[in-house]
Length: 598
Image 1: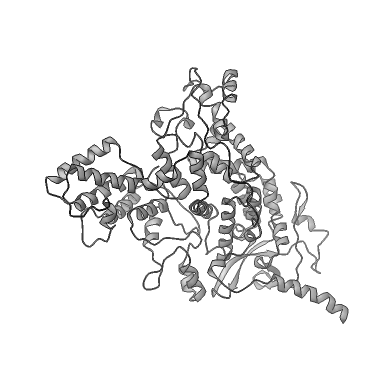
Image 2: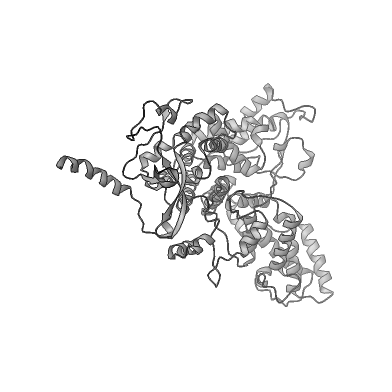
């Protein structure tokens, strides 16, 4: 009997150690493999090179045209090698740009700063913010923005779009854990290959797809940018066949949450490894990678699977999680994995496939990323400080070569709405990319669910219901996606234009309708100017300057000021007040294309 107790007690002790902790705190809801990595020092200091290259003039040769593509000969190679360019994007571009006689397009500082704020902070800055942040060189500016919490939030929202976070499909605890993992990646604490490994076995990923083949295909698409060949899909499926989609009852939230479970395969009747069938649970295409689990006291029988034993992913140990991450480690060995990583960042900032047009840029960025220990921030830094990004989109139609002019993109719905509300002081609720269906938490009737909503970015109205004013607007414009089937979309249509104009009309209230609760007039007027002040050309110019700086993040040019003075002179003929001028002017600025495209 003593011998039997000696064998059982260690097993029971291990089981107790693996049990989840049910003390629920909204700030600590995350649970999963993302909490097991990236807990040490950052991979790099974050002081990357190449932020302030002195851009060369084009080589004095006849530039290529429609009939002659760029061809970098010996003189071009010598010229580019002698420029001492440190930014990998600039180095890759030189032989298709300056070295063949093509110039890049200088950009105004205010335009570049606004672009950086939208892409890295997720909002349009005021002119005061832009002038305070975008000083000391582009390298310093990008580092400031990249070190901000807003940058992390932008990357988290992009990851939610990429992996389609939905609490109807995946456990909230797993979604919060994935969000935590993305934050670590964005702070330089997790190398990109480790990130891919964790994602490949993360419940947010594995619970999304129906069978092993679908999981294998999704992994290839996400991290290699292509679907697997049939033999690759079949082989990778062998190490994905363990995953099963199920549900567990959360004791505090009072909800049945969807989550991932492990099924036991390639075992005999005694639940030991079957030597005959064990090859069915091993990938052999990239070396021998076996993935077999044997059940212990943590396993439970699932009546929906003919009472087969399953293991809830919430009970897995760090060692078991690491073993399950074989698929991600396999794809990270491929050069195409790193190429896809830099292509994703290029697309994020430029909006077009620069690598397909100038492959040298991709090669240089991959070297740069690997030299910086897989810290993906290095690629963000390189692209955001490059000539490809920091150049103007004006006059783009006259150029044959896409990389000779800068990006022009449509802002996301959240960026558009948040910037409008923030810059005018208009109070609006928000939406939380981690909880795409907040109503489920309220319907659970639990205190924990209510507390979780209170600490999220969702807001509750006076009746305790989810305030949907923000989401009704955002989802019409393609934002705040529920991610059950589809995700975010961007479109310019009659419906979206009408929706945007309706919101701007509410915000600015150009008709001065007393029933409309728009932005406070104090936000639309210079400090100290009363709403009833009589307008003349000088007052109109003051109002215009204030609104341009606050609403568009820049000062008006001479032409714009002249137009404002002319409008002020016309307004003075009717003895209009400052408010009567400011509100229609606000509508004109906020409904302009400059607020929709950047």
